[in-house]
Image (cartoon, rainbow, N blue to C red; front, side, top):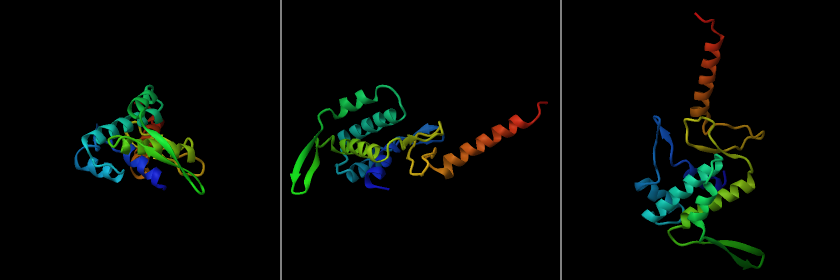
Length: 169
């Protein structure tokens, strides 16, 4: 997994559903650690921007309305500046300090979409709020984890088929 893929999934998957309730992980110590991994300080402003970008990207990936406007509102002041070098151009992220970690996540999302178009998706388990990057050859991965959501969904489908096959009483 590339660094961009890992970074993007780490942030997208910071709002898991545990026992039927969403859990916010971009707060407190966990949020600070992740913001620092993204080159930030873990300030409240950085965490607020990270939550906003995460939520907007989750909506965008899931095909919900309003996500592009939310991203534009959050990151409208961020720029990519060209740095000319002997062997070509390197693009440098130019963002206010409180937006830099969130902008880095948006940049990772763009790179993942360019490298693996159509492979970033929400878990097919509607009771899950996690995302995956499908690395399978045929592009058929559905679940964030086969050992959790995949097994649950297959067990549910099997139970449904069994109930349907039994005669009514």
